[in-house]
Length: 219
Image 1 (cartoon, rainbow, N blue to C red):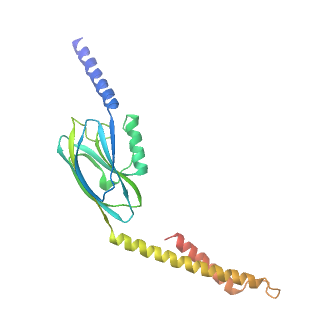
Image 2 (image 1 turned 90 degrees about the horizontal axis):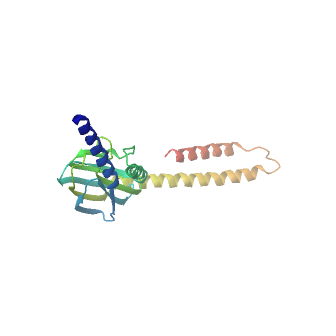
């Protein structure tokens, strides 16, 4: 009988702690506009702190996250879409599916350092998670003090490649416009009584224009 009572009390304790964990879930979102910053942040039990920043496709970020006091935690680097899924999982109160860039993902750890080339221009999120939510993540035993440093710099190689691609696209656009003008001129000439069908030149230019358009799409 005593054993059954103990089991029941244990189960009640688990349910109570789970309910409290859901109720006490806290989200903190911090906007960062500087290219270089650092701070030590106190993160409570069942709290996740999110750093929101703007990045360009020619940026490289360097991030160091370290727990200076407390247990292990989880970290994630996410796009806007991925963060929306992560946030939805948190609000539902149960573990769910979401994506994080592999370079910025760390589960149940006290230290993480990475460099990452941003794939596109947009808004990004770095989450430091001290909650029960993510599957296979850390289990908070209390608040943690987390030191984070962040730098965002230009990727010269990326900028050069982007500029070269832009110039190639501009040249293809110029060639396409020139061919289009020639085709229009050829079409106008074919309307004359003595010319009832397009000439070889028009057919050649049409094929060349199609080729340029397809090449532009595949770049």
